[in-house]
Every structure is written in C-alpha cells, then in structure tokens.
Length: 375
Ligand code: SF4
Image (tube, rainbow, N blue to C red; front, side):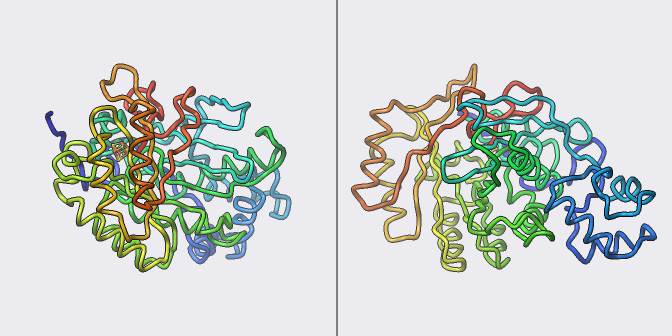
C-alpha cells in the first residue's frame, strides 16, 4: 500500500485571508488592552466578554450596557462574525446536529452537537482539512487548508451553547457540558491555538465559557513532543490517542506520522501525560474490516495497555462512499472487545451517533470539495 506523507509543520495558513482578530483569541488582559487601543476604557473588554461568553451574543443591538454610538464599532472590531452556517443536518429526533461552517477564505469545517440524557457534547474541528494523511479518512486525503484560530474553534462551541440556551435543540434549554476535539484536523498540529481555545472554553464565566476542564478531550494521532508540552500546561484535559494499530508495521500505513514517532514512543508520552495530569488516557481504535481487527492484534493491544491508566474506545469505522475501508463485522468487533475485557482493559464500543447524517467521527463534510471527514 503506498504510504502518503503527513504534513507535520507548515505555514500557518496555506492560502486565503487570515481570520479577523476576535475577542476569543485574546486573554482578559489583552481584551482590555484591545479596548484601550480602540480609544475605549479597558473595562469595555470585560463587558464584551460578558456578552459573548455569558449571554452568548455578538449582536450590538443587545449590548444595552454600552453607549449606543460605541456598540457597533466595538462589536465590529472585537466580535466579528467568524463562521457562517452553510448547512445544518440533524438526526436522533434533532438531538444530533451537524453544522457545516464556512470560515474566512472559503475554508470549510464542521461541528457536531450530540445531546444525551446526562450531557451535551460538542465535537469541534481544529483545522480546516488535515495534514496527517491517514488513508482511511477523507479529510486526510484532501490535505490541510489552514489552521483555525482559537476564536474560530471557540465559535463552534458558542454556537452550540447558544442553540441550547435558546431552546432550539429538542429536550429543553440546556448547556454544553463536554467538548471533544475530534472533528477535522490534528489538534496538536495547531498547538497554541488549540490550547488558547481550551483556556477560553474552560475559563470561568465571563472570561470564558466555564466548561469543566475535565470535560474537555483533546485527541492526537501521536505528536510526541506536543503531548509532552500539553502535559506541562496545567490543563488536566483528557488526552485521546488515535492508535488504530498496536504494531508499527500496520500503524506506519494507517497513521503515517507513526514513521516519525513509533507506537512505543507515543504510548510512553501518553503514560507520562496520565502521570502528570492524573487523567486516564483514551486509546481510540477504529476497527477496520480485515485490516486491524484480528484477534492477535487485540491481544497485542492488551499487552501494550495492561497496567496503565487507559481506556479503549473501539470505533466501528464509518465507511465513506467509494472507499475500500469499511467497518468490521459485529461478531469480529465483539471478539476484539472481549479479548481486551478479559485482560481487564477498560473498553467500550463507541456510540456512532450521527452516522446517517455523515456526522459521526471520520465522516465530516464528506460531500464538500476540499473538506472532508474528521479524526
Ligand atoms: S483521521 Fe484525523 S488525523 Fe488522520 S487524516 Fe483524518 S482528521 Fe487527520
């Protein structure tokens, strides 16, 4: 099988205009400084934060605590509209909603809101496209368009929070409780913006959205230095490692970045992350028929994980139209799960919500040229 080359580093944006600066790109001190640069008192930065993060509005007409003449220019300068909803699809009686967003420069990304009885999870994109080139993922085939800014990531969560607060999602008014960075892109390849977005998402209201750090999951294919850096941020978010194979021979092909950082190095970094944060690491394993779903690979995975603070998420691969990669048979999946469970490895088969709207993991924006699928 020909192995595509991942793009580990590259220009911050690969064409198209840069997204405009937004309040959510800035920390509270920088917001005050930005207000002063606009000839306003610094506390206007705090007032705008309250509108955006607490009241979930960027509409100047609703900002009645600001002088009428200043509302429009302040909102224009610090709360520009970053994402425009192009298309929205829902299923599960409206409790799963996928939104296709158009960002600056014609980049497309998607987010998915999933409402469960006990929580609401937003799955967000961190990049438009992805440079990691995993061959079973259409996003990987389309390549990286550009990194999203912190504010563009936060805007996906704010949109979900707003829809819930306004009772637009069946089940009554609610709030976003969990955020997972599992949409398009490799989050740790856009490190500083993803970390800034996590801070905005988890900072207390009104500096941020006030979502618990423990309810945020950042996924990675295994960028080892960035995992180490994340461990030192003092942000005890959950780390999800997309492993997909226990052996380097196969992982070199399924996750091309494995040729740079091998399975053992990735897992060592994961265990160090678990030790630094006290958080159990999620090991993501997309079960792909006849590729990585053999019983011996389940046993090899159990050997790697035994005794470590880990939990395995088995994900039935969502087939993409025209792709040879497809989900394992249910009986094979069960066998794989049981082999791990017999070795006392915590394991669950992930809910594949949203499959019928191409909203499940690995299926984002499959119909949109230049944008597809997520990790
Ligand atoms: S699976 Fe994830 S990391 Fe791999 S190409 Fe797709 S979006 Fe990127």
